[in-house]
Length: 412
Image 1: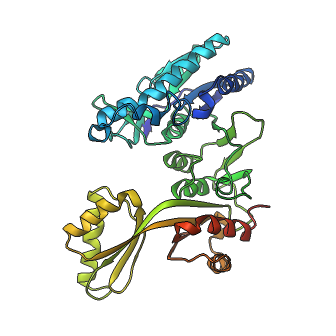
Image 2 (image 1 turned 180 degrees about the vertical axis):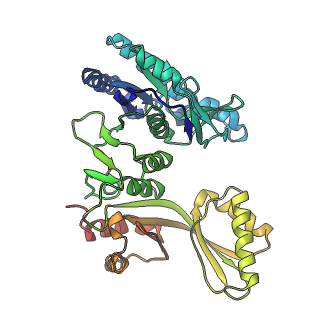
Image 3 (image 1 turned 60 degrees about the horizontal axis):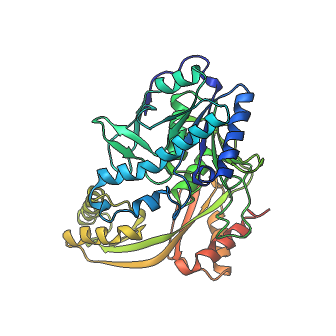
């Protein structure tokens, strides 16, 4: 992502992103205004980023807007136009209420805020930001309110950044504006050790490393949009996740060079929408036939836009997992390649995350013991320096999350 160099003094800027539950009600907007007033009193220059108002079923929520039409998947450009209106409404409403409270709020579309994208409808990537209009507004005493989740392609098309993209808008603006910090507000107190809807013992983390936050987002946690977590990791920018409605200090996202956790595990993430595919490769492991088949599969899946996960080649087969909504497309790709394969659905992926596990022996052994004691059947495993993932039956997901959370003492 490229951006213009912000002027000296821009370190007084603070980015404050508010989610749908914060902007969707008068109570939430009053709390938002109080946050902005506090920032102004502290001689900060707040730049507000907003999501669409409310949740599914409420008039201006994204899913509610999409329910107004039935053929949107066939017209991605209009799909983006419709989805973007929720954030535009929120920006105008919040700017209006700021002005009513005596604060010079000013609404901006993503394009007006200088956000450029690669033009991919529905999942665009921010490629450049030209923050001059926002900086001018701040210097003129205005409080910009930017519609999140959107930007403009080089040829002038409005594009959206994918669900949760307002987080990415906030972090990208934070980098481009040289902001002192980015604060992401929602209706929870911060980043939690597990999803509280799945794990009763989940607690709020005081601090989390940026690489751990990225892994949580990548492995199913929904507290922060994955590209936003990636930006926080790459930039070393100060990020804090907080609750709009409480004075809880929230969770600080720490630079990986400045913080090392004192335990092997930090959190447990999960996804319950997983399928697995087993492909017959033919040939002997390492042979030209074997490698050629793998290469053909990887290239064909990439060309079809299918993202693979937990891929493991064996002597004569290739195992991989993917989101179950992509299974039909993946099956069609394999059929076109004239390869034999089997599929399994109704699986979940549960991931133990912790920068402290790197180089520590026995973490996998402990994980296997806790899952076995809980009666969880492991189908497949995968690991990295900071994660260990297991593929399990979806019906055992809650049990697995609870067993790992308790076993690694994340509820303390």
